[in-house]
Image (cartoon, rainbow, N blue to C red; front, side):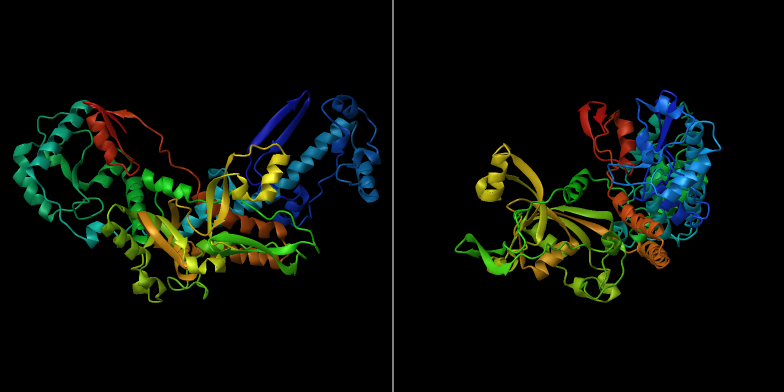
Length: 592
């Protein structure tokens, strides 16, 4: 089934094969037309014997003017045969064409025509959710845009949004306008105007210090109205961008607004700044600007091949194996129970269940619901005992069990790098199903992977001491620093007797449950499709929720982008939110 229309063309002589290369569901084209079109009323797809032609014989086969035989339609690989009724319909259709080439063109036109209504339906569905399908290249992009649009459904361009987590407000320290600051700004503005060829004769100078020192006491950013603090320092924004920084052509603006405005359209800039303030006020996700935080989060994403030890089980013969720790040795023994079945456990719509923010009684933290992380607030490197105690206070916040909204607001979402282990006296409670699931690098030695798997690799001529990295169930962090987020670490501490040995760092984040409307909407659509027995539409809604979750985890940061800048360009780079860091290479050369 096709969602968007990027097309790959392959020419084989006179035969042009067209492949649509953006599938969303593993279902047939005919079923796609039924589920997303008009229920199959105009679903005449036709039939064609694909196995009867190849790149070697297509010319001589297609130039014939006799119909294909019924055997030509049989697929030996899949063991499928065309029915007598379908073959009779083909024979009736073939009478209208001079040769097989003409019939092939007719068949391809049917394939195209049958897709028109379903694609129109998908476009209408996305349009009803407020997005234009053709502005995006994948289903994940569309779903993610709908998710954030619904998260911002109460956005108002004229409202005043205040960020409650802003440290400039919680620990308010007014900006002190010093003479040194005035001198640095004057020098910077003169260089800017000189490079731009603007008149500098009437520019502000050091003698204007007292004037601006008094003016800033009653001033705020002319654009966003924010007060100036140590963390939100003032700049002078030019009213007329074609003129220099003269006293009658400048006004106070915060750094972000000044950079965002630049020479851009004022209305678009206002929308951009207001949207950012909305995201900060609501705790919604913002781009990660710390490279250290970025790498910690990327390394914490688990997945891939899992490490499986017991691969050899025979129904009715193999006894269920268990392990036990005795005298610092792991003893493997067979129980009296014999293997009868292998059971696979899956979760119905796990991703949307996680980020839905819906309440469930089995969630014992933050008011019986899971919050999602937003933007990074602060990062602490735990180098002293005092730093570690501060991190442990954040991790072990007793208010995490509270049901009161005011208490929940005081619980900080975090990701921390720690070393730890399950309490020794409880190891046998978890040794058969270790609760710490992390990627682990290990050498494939016999005392590590066991005799059975070691013999397997020897038998297949695999290197005996090779290193692998697989998803592994653990009882400790194996002496390594591993990253854990709030809810996972709370579960390990409160339910699995996990003990934290060392804290390396902790990153705090805002929290939100703004994705609940998106999950509720698509879940209702999925249930409705299921009741209507429309499997395609049901899968579409399910995959929309899942893919929107994956889209948020895509690597969209470019931390390896480096450019050479002079002192002034480096200063301006510091004002951008995407700024990562700089290094001085020479007197006036910086790597940014």
